[in-house]
Amino acid sequence: MKPKAVQNITRRPVFFRLVLWVCCIGLLGWSAAPAWAQCNYVRADSYLAFATANDYVSPSTGDYLGGYGPGDDKDGDGLTNRQEWDGWSTDVNGVLTYFGWRTAATAPAGAVLEPGGCLEDVDSDCDGMSDYVERSALTNPQNGDTDGDGMGDAWEVYVGLDPRDDGTVNPDNAPGADPDGDGLTSAEEMLGPGCIYSGLSCATKENPFTQPAFGEDDFTYPLHYDSDGDKLIDSYEYQSGHGLDPVVADDSGADPDADGLTSFREQCVHPLLANFWGANSFASGE
Image (cartoon, rainbow, N blue to C red):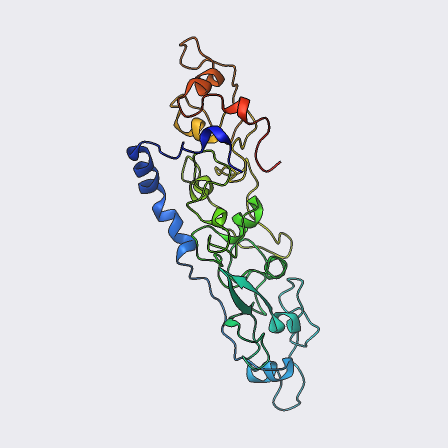
């Protein structure tokens, strides 16, 4: 449920929202139009047939090449080669989808077939989640934005949104939604006030999930209206003009503009935030 006093705070000045999106629209493109696919194997209905069709079996001896046996883990990502071939299935935007290398004959009936993970890559799409983590999250191992909503899978997993739903199933998962009612859409929370979200670095065997932690990047939480816990709402810190930072806890008792009102009081007399803290005793998501 959205906090009572800020359900309409999203009606901010058009100029502010225009500046924000002009600043950030290019960054949204990195996940809206992914181009990370690294492999495209011949599909088969058994691992042996798959390995043979993709030249992982010696034609002279019939033996698997080094590291390509079904129980081997060629890339060291925690998934055996057979598991990478076998893949996984889930609903994406309400549609049953299969990520793997089986053919339609042995994949889940009626599923949309998508490529699975690469046997030679720990993080096939270089989205910050290893293929092992992708299997756990049921996300697309060759597309860093499984649901195509412009918000990266690793970030959505980290903050608690569903990387397999663009809002089709649950409107709160849409990039334009504001599930914590703080006046910032989820897409705006990801990009942060500085428009510098940098969450893409390839996962490795040693670090299978590389999404920067809160405080290490400039994003705010879409499911918590006071991301840094300083009793100043994220959208107010965005727009105050007093150098407040929604990622770093500021002194809500300070008076940066020396007008006799603390930052907390200025927030409370804002016409869209009046009585906010009285109506909401704890932050959403708790």
